[in-house]
Amino acid sequence: MAAIDRSIVADLPIFAELGADDLDEILREARSVRYPKDTSVFDQGDDAHSFFLLLHGHLRVERVASQGQQIVVRYVSAGELFGVAQAMALKKYPATAVAAVDSIALSWPSSAWSRLTTKFPSLAAGALQTVGSRLQDTQARVIEMSSEQVEPRVAHALLRLAKQAGRKVEHGIEIDFPISRQDVAEMTGTTLHTVSRILSAWEQQGLVEGGRQRIVLRDPHRLFGLAEGHGKHGD
Amino acid sequence: MAAIDRSIVADLPIFAELGADDLDEILREARSVRYPKDTSVFDQGDDAHSFFLLLHGHLRVERVASQGQQIVVRYVSAGELFGVAQAMALKKYPATAVAAVDSIALSWPSSAWSRLTTKFPSLAAGALQTVGSRLQDTQARVIEMSSEQVEPRVAHALLRLAKQAGRKVEHGIEIDFPISRQDVAEMTGTTLHTVSRILSAWEQQGLVEGGRQRIVLRDPHRLFGLAEGHGKHGD
Image (cartoon, rainbow over all chains, first blue to last red; front, side, top):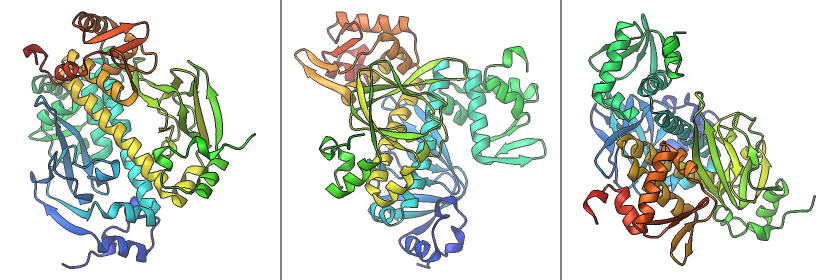
């Protein structure tokens, strides 16, 4: 297997504090793997054998509950650590990670985590920031779901996606991977029917532009107003 | 200020790998503070000046959303790190921590976090496990709320509390701090009225025993069945 050149990761924030020799040492234990669109990196319940860094692409992280309902937990973007289950004291992956587009990740054996983070504390600090920001996002979802109003929840979900994986296009901000209305329903704890109704209304009002597995936010400012519950009074 | 004796923390899992000199070094920067019942350790939006370790008692962590609805994010038990906002790259505390009973915590200035975790990687590993387990709990709540059935959500919430802070008593497992029906409503995204209706029915069926700010799980096994949605078919 060819060595992984440090130039492909040196710009990532998680490695920012590390020198060339340190990076080489970390990369020596990594494998680089391609995941074609719709293939899974790991499945919920699998032994947590590896942890990963996404180099290119986007992953959709899904979780199935005991009663069979599925939710989209989050999306992973390039530069993010994922699958750090063992570092969180979990023996098995708590969710399934699926390539939303053709993607490339580095993987390390989970057994290397403790040794690498002891030697390079900035890795542990980066992981803590990643997990911490997921916790904040997940708590925000709990709050939104507690409010029991669906429209602000959908607006919040689209704004979070745009912040994480938005790409400036002519008419606004496009979410930079294929996303279906069913995905949005599973992110907001509602039904496909409700999401379709809301997005169709927003399209007519010029707030978003849709298409097959495609969402463009045409007016993020007004969407933010809806997310904060100001929709009924204009803004 | 008197020095904090290492004997009061040496048994905590987060310090398990550290020697006496290491512990003394860590404790030298800590302050020990008492928080009488119903006082706050920090408030949502305050500058994240310190991080903490709860030595004794229980805290309720609450978060208020922009539209004013309040949720109980979690409870903190003795031995847990909390307020590690700055380690998660947050400048302000994302929630309010209130003493549910008279409590004692150690506090360190947030500025010490990076230095201490670099020197003692097991601290960072412990923090990652703490934040990771909160993330798992919060994701479980999102899944439960997506199911839109209230009864399993309340059962799950009580079982989580019993796992975290349960105390064996004659008739079952008592949640070891004062908890109101309103608290349970704010943990499950439902109303006081609904929680009262569910708990009253469960009391009549001998599943739980209530009282003023007091909950005893009399039959955790059957509650688990309800949490998994088997309630309608008996178990």
